[in-house]
Image 1 (cartoon, protein in one colour):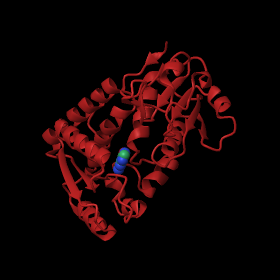
Image 2 (image 1 turned 180 degrees about the vertical axis):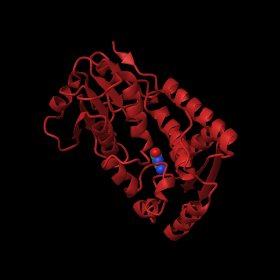
Image 3 (image 1 turned 30 degrees about the vertical axis):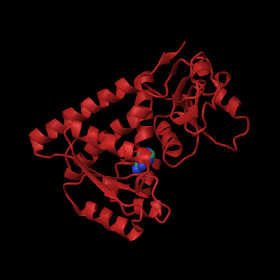
Length: 292
Ligand code: GUN
C-alpha cells in the first residue's frame, strides 16, 4: 500500500503560511491584500467554489470582493467591470470564475485582466512568462501539484514525468512547471499511442483528463508518485453518487509509492494556492519582498 498524500492537511499549512504573511503585510506595511472574484450566472458548482473562495480569503485576513452578475451580462459589461477592478488599487487579485455564459468569449475577458493581478495565471502574458521560465502568476491547480511533489521528493531533477491531459488550465502549465524542475516531461493525451506503456515509464504521473478512473493499476511503475487532478461524480454501487479521480485509486495504490486521493488530494490545494498567489501578486505590485 502506498503513502497517501494528505492534500487537506497540506492545504491547511499553505493557508496558515498565507495568514502569517498577510498579518506581516498589515503590521509592517499597512497593506491588506484584496481578492476580487467575479461570478456570472447561477452555475451551482461555480457558486459553491466562489463561496468557498470568499470564506477562505477572509479567514486568511485578506479582503474579499465578490461581484455577482446575471447570466444575461454582455461581454462589454463584464470587460467594463474587469477594467474597473484593474484600476482599483485595493484589488490585488482578480479571478473571473469559469465557465462563462455562451454569449461571452472567456479568452477575450481573461485578456483584459491586468497580468499582474491575474491570480489564476490564465492571461497569455503569464502563460508566456511561465513557458520561458520568467517570474509569472502560476495557475493554482498545477502550482498545488508541484508543491506537493517537491514536498514529497525534494529534488525532482531527472525524473521521468508524464502529464496525462493537455488543457491550458492544468496539463500544459503542469508540464512547464515539471520542466522548470528539470524533469523529463511527456504530455500524453487522447491521441497518444499506447498510453499504458507511456505511463509505465513514469516516475511521476499527473492525471488531468477528466475521465473517471481511467489510469489503471498496471499502468503504474512500482514506487511511482501519482497525482490525481480529476474530480468526477459517478454513480456508486449503492446507487448514490460519489467523487472519483482520473485514477483507479484502489488499483493504483497497490503499485504507487505515493498517491493523492480524491477527494482530499489536489482539490483543497487549488484555493490555498489562489490565496498564496494573491499574497505574491500584492507584494509584487507594492515592490516589496514576500514575507517569510
Ligand atoms: N472554474 C473551475 N476552476 C476554476 C479556476 O481555477 N479558476 C477559474 N477562474 N474558474 C474556475
